Image (cartoon, rainbow, N blue to C red; front, side, top):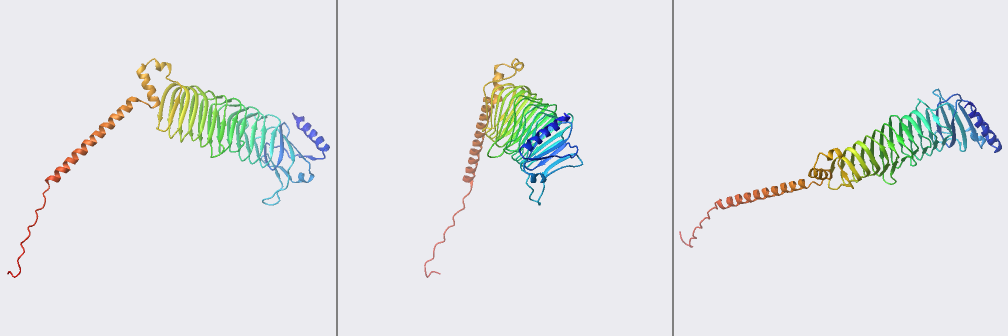
Length: 406
């Protein structure tokens, strides 16, 4: 491990000499965090020794690059400023780094960060942040708490598996965050904003999974998960969002959807499952086996499922719809009820109870009849009062006297 960085530096030094490039080995002491800004290429290897090797095809640009380590052990890589707005040119500079571990990796500008080895922090946390037009490629990561934030036009790809006590991913970048397998002891929080996305290629195992996806008009925000195994899962999606998930094992799952589309292949053996859909949301679920399922659909929302087994409670308005291929109560409940009660339960679950409609209709008819009778009685009373009302007597005209009569 100690000779790894020396060998890499020697190889790069020979290559730069053959191509006429300039290079130097900068000894700045130990560091455990990296902050990069500017169009540079970073290559990282985890090693027992801290090292910084810089290479450039242009000699003048080497002088424009600032590398410094502060008292907290943070290595800052940035261009030399000209004034408050302009900086010197550092394009094309390649930097090779090595350290025993890293607490923080922050990259911005047009930089790139590539890890040649796995990052094993053990019980230490790791904070990753990429912004602007950064491209980051990492291998497997082991840490206590892992946080990934992606913004702007950045792209963060982790080719290896993630092993951590907790994981938090916030993506507002167009290219988003791409993960492989995730194994987390406690909670996983995924947050997606605007036109971003999070993709999970392999398995996801955790105790609690919280997914928040907020979209906007135009390109939809996306979240794609495969083989989820968790105790509790909560999904909130709003405004032009697409969520695709395959759940292997879950105890409790809740979905809240507004103006979006959610597709879940199946929900096996869940204790509680609820869906709140509003403002034209479309939720499509495969086979559902749950002890209790609650559905609340409003304002042109739609829930499609190929089959539900369990105790079902629904609340639908006139514009929403529940589509199902098979709706069956649980076996132990089925033994206690007869055919009429089973039919009533199904009608109540779909919101199409015939008895309720007839009762409501009879109530409306009786109400209309009583109102009509009241109007007739009131009219007769008014007519009678009109007839009994006395008319004033007409005044008699006095006869006109002839002329000359006194």
